[in-house]
Image: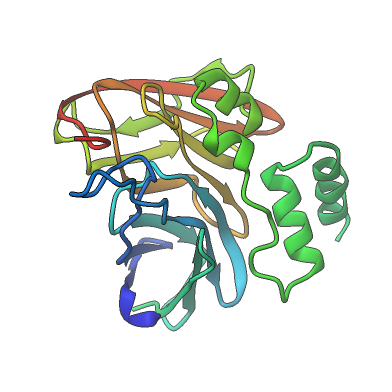
Amino acid sequence: MADAMKMRATMDGDAVDVKVLIQHPMDTGLLKDKNDKLIPAHFINQVVATLNGKTVIDSQWGTGIAKNPFIGFRIKGAKPGDKVGINAVDNLGTKYDGEVVVA
Amino acid sequence: MNQFRRAFLKGAGTVGTVAMAIATGLLKPGAVFAATWNTLAFTTKDLSEAISNAGYAGATDSSDIVIKAPDIAENGAVVPVSATCNIPGTTSMAIFVEKNPAPMIADFAFSNGAEPYISTRIKMAKTSVVRVSVKAGGKNYTNSREVKVTIGGCGG
């Protein structure tokens, strides 16, 4: 589901600045819909960032990350042409993958 | 490879830590999501329980953790928060919102050159203290900052 993810990686000094946007409802399971029924929890809970295939950030998320999650991070020692990848999975097992080349 | 092995042995001792995740990830490069989701820490409603289950208990206050967040958030559903840690040897960082129904927001483990910096957007149910805890050199550090919320982000 690469369409659901937008990524940008730009050099800033000796580090690459990565910004990632994922389209996702991030439902907490605590909200009710119009018919007073609970909306089941549906949220991204594991996100791994890689630089040229090597894990740089391994994260776990709860329901407290806002809808359509944004994450920004920096990796030292990257250079233009390197590949930054994101592998995310939600609590229902749907995978979201994205890759961007450092500009 | 020796330090990887050390990390693995260290991680094996404490169940569900991120160290475990990294270590198993290194042993099995094919498996991307090596760690199982830390259900205990993320589902608890109790702040101190969340902190200890995530492995950030007994933290010392440190102003070397710089939290950037608005003083007043108009909309609690989307609160931009970023945190930088200036303590050398920072390996992981977690974000907690003390008054959220589930206080634990996220836990990030850094490796292979990732800077101890995270920028994201979080949900806040009401005015609360945002706490950022880090693990650095085998010790835990924490810092916090209050964010006033005018419209809550969880529950209408």
